[in-house]
Image (spheres, rainbow, N blue to C red):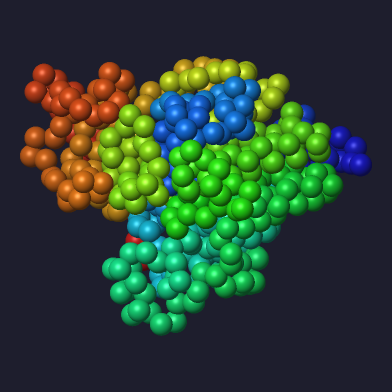
Length: 460
Ligand code: MG
């Protein structure tokens, strides 16, 4: 066991050698941090968010023992950009990861980006990424090159091989790339299986995560676990124990198994005696894939889903729990985004924010720990490299929109529609005629953003 003094000295040394940020004081124990990310889970898919037939007792309990957000956003409406933004704390456009990466992509998360893991590891954190990465599958982009001690999982979506792709257009593209292998399951930087049995994936990710928790506690290091699940992205698979059990059908089975996984993680934390020193968060990377019909989820009362900048594409469940630190049973209307997780994790770990770049996230700890109202809502909604909408306070203005669920392509508005999201979360009633001043202000915000934006190199 280190004495407190030598622990502080160690921290100070690591801070000196730290190129990214400084450890701000070493008082008290540094918290463990867990981010659990579902894939394509909608705002309306959990029991505690109103789903009538999907049972999520573990997430419901986590919300009851912690805080649940009703105005929390992913930073994009599709996988790769959303994940880049979460890990780097910046809008996808700044990272250059604007679009979904394919198994033949040569791009990925750039070396100059700093992930949460990269910021925490030099200050003494053990770090692991378990699950779907989707920020580039070539060696230079893998989690192990971006701050994670360990990686286990499928590096992109589970529908991106000849055996699993359901989309004829995607299969056509795949056929132009004969070099693309079957779905790889990787450990660190090695492919350990091809086309793994997807029915076992959620359970295997959970086992790996639990092993990492045990190893970290044994080592005495604080830990950061990033657990981006493969599901409920299609094709859907649940283990035998869950298959056929949910009234919602296979989609419900899959979500109920993810809920079980959350329960196992929290049970392990309690068993290891670190529950009171661990922040656990749960959210999703983008809204439900509505064109998949019964195999896609629900955005609840929100309009549209995955691939759209209407609210259903980006507003997500967000639940955070930390017994003894986060007051129980809070349902907050405070605004938050996945980009806030970077500054929040660094703040809680006592690590100084890098000062050489622009961040779009804000530290959420006052909302989490003290139930404070937090900042005013403010978000730019991008689809690809195109700015589609902006939210400021209650107001959201659309420059353009698309509706994949109804097959409607892109509409660019000459007269941008304006919605009040507090009064009209379903975006039904255009108020632009009665609020020209708000429209003008929001257009000005957009102009200013465009003028000062430095986009990252586009990744394809
Ligand atoms: Mg996704």
